[in-house]
Image 1: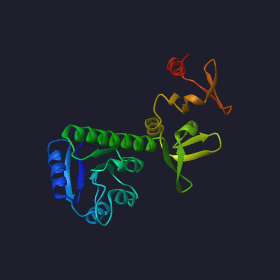
Image 2 (image 1 turned 60 degrees about the horizontal axis):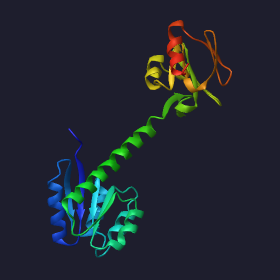
Image 3 (image 1 turned 180 degrees about the vertical axis):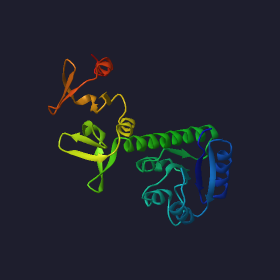
Image 4 (image 1 turned 60 degrees about the vertical axis):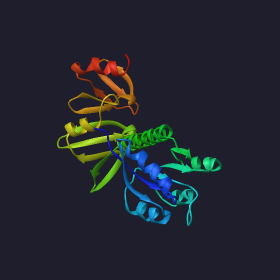
Length: 234
């Protein structure tokens, strides 16, 4: 089942709000969380509640739609709806997903909502990727962030692991199993029982030995050699 996206409508004109509310009801993957004729009330709501999409008019009393969105530190995805084409450039400058001119047709509204949905999906994907490009380990009584791209190899040392980068090495109480799950193919490869190497850090291979860019030489298990060669494109 697709994720249901929460939206709010902001327009000081009742008829304008009603049209958009009716459009929202026709689309199964969005739901109307609230609707506002007063932009300041909408602003208060946005500061307290989580919303995925804001459908807002631009020209409104007290505070216009552009000012409202610009006042939010982390605004939701926005679709501006207005009777004035002249505001389009300013609307897109705020990072809006789309800009609709009244009277809005449903097919054009649906296209804007699908564009907003794509914005949200891409943002979530980007955030997820940003969170999976690093690990945190506990060492010397504190949590230390290590970027995956900086790791050259991981070595098992009894109940501890040594994590080596070009500039530093860290010792942490952990298992090879848990590290093997965190450092996945194709970037990392477990060449033998006690070592995981960063494939991009491989400088040379001599027989059953692999040499890394920092000069570290590690033996390769015979059963792992063909798979390593495949990862290296050999």
